[in-house]
Image (cartoon, rainbow, N blue to C red; front, side, top):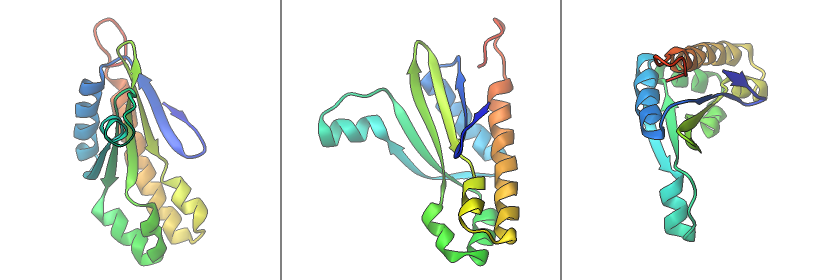
Amino acid sequence: MDSTDFTLGATLDASYDETVARVRALLADAGFGVLTEIDIRATLQAKLGVEVPAQLILGACRPELAHRALQVEPRVAALMPCNVVVADAGEGRTRVDVMDPALIASLAPDPRLAEVAAEGRARLTGMMEALTATAAPDGSNR
């Protein structure tokens, strides 16, 4: 798993469809529901007539964390839900990027919000670790 200033991500040796299904299952295991879905490929095809690789944005939410965060800072709703992006990276590979909840804590410095963000980050990091830990018999990540 790699980390940027605002995402936790990984590229997997697995098909797009397989990865989407696995991400959905692992989000549920981590206590997150998917509130929204945006099919980037379908949207850009319909609106602009352009072809792009498959890419899906899943808006993930753990209600308990959302509620706690909103009690601390109601404006944090503008940053919800946590986006999880699954994108076809070509050649049987798929890229998964998750918005790092630490970003929310960095924008609103209340320590109570940092606690909520840390719990969300731990759960999403665990989800990403589970996603990347499953190895196929040939040793590739699946």
